[in-house]
Image 1 (cartoon, rainbow, N blue to C red):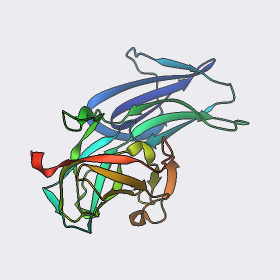
Image 2: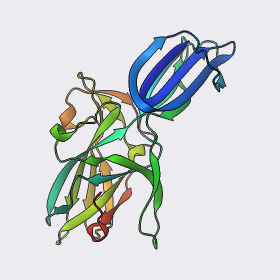
Image 3: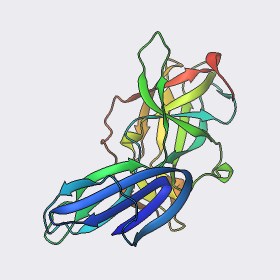
Image 4: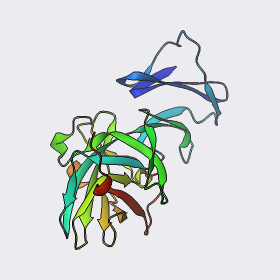
Length: 249
């Protein structure tokens, strides 16, 4: 049997006669341990069972980004001048995906995935308009990498907010479409996503979104760990909540 921990998540997995068994739990405190061989746990656990080919005898634990958009606030009230850009860095808690492969297997097989931290769901959008359910990030967007203090178990996402309008852009929250981002790792162990650019040309509430195709400039030499859940296409939009309803906690 093997076990690993990432933030609040604890995972156990082992081979059985027809495939793999996986158990998980979330704890209130954070621990980070790589996969290691352990004795079977003394307490009973609820196991998920996955039937897989006998050749699928290698397990990989892969960090991926959440399955819904995330909502991030800046560390203070932000106003971007007309025809100017703002640069931010957001840390996003990763999920852990369990993939199996083996001799003769052409592709790895995903068994399951779990969030490393329990995130609160939130509605993003004005009550009278269309919106979307996403996850609220407890940490704030920062304007410098040096200001980040919560990088363990999280992926650093560089965000460029481009104000192409003739008026100042003021906002309180940003919606990030993380399903279109992959994860990269630098030699110092830090996790990064590809760059996300939000361009506001006509409205303060809706932006066009584009994504970098590789590791960001701040993560030189980073190696890819996981692909985006969904390959980005043209026409992606994101919302921002304007400064008129800004709340600072």
